Length: 263
Ligand code: XBP
Ligand code: MG
Image 1: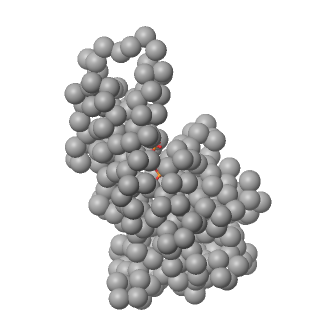
Image 2 (image 1 turned 90 degrees about the vertical axis):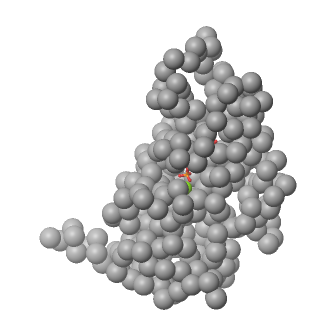
């Protein structure tokens, strides 16, 4: 049975509840460009169906504003809006100290202390990741990761498996040696398509997603005094996801896969 060697973390919605900040940053960029577009929460919930900021703006135009007179250089127009959005987002992160979700830093410290490798696997812009790692952890965490796989390094964003394939190839890890941490159905599909078993922590934008195939679904990772809750799955972490629990979960998932292959 392969050993658990690495934890692969999504960023938005998994490390921190950043989607609200992304939403405000998109709206700030639209206003600065003189556009009367406004993405409220229910609309953003629907738009999250598409990963990637530029892809999301294009999808908005296609689906919600078919009558919008498109500039000749639509790609350039979208890229400009998105560049501005990233600027607003980075400012907000630097200003506001966006808190990490419960248990994230604790679990990473635990994993590092036990010699596990960590990597980031996300569709968001690389600068967004670096900023979160420097501003939201109690120490600068950017050196903790073997790899930060982010943004446009692959052709197809989640739910395509490309970013997980890329991360596995760059780190030399086998899917069976890893566990992924995701918050959305797009992230789950991406990881599972690359053969990586996945733990889900829900948030307000993803609580209604279909997480079938996930190894376990929890409300959060849990902290002492702030226990996590099992939403779906066979193994209950009893309040706290730690390395002992992840070792059990990993062994359970590998056995389940072996069993399925034999039958
Ligand atoms: C995150 C995203 C990102 C952000 C916006 O998905 O979909 O697009 O919402 O980031 P995941 P950019 O958590 O699955 O990686 O604007 O930088 O693309
Ligand atoms: Mg996510």
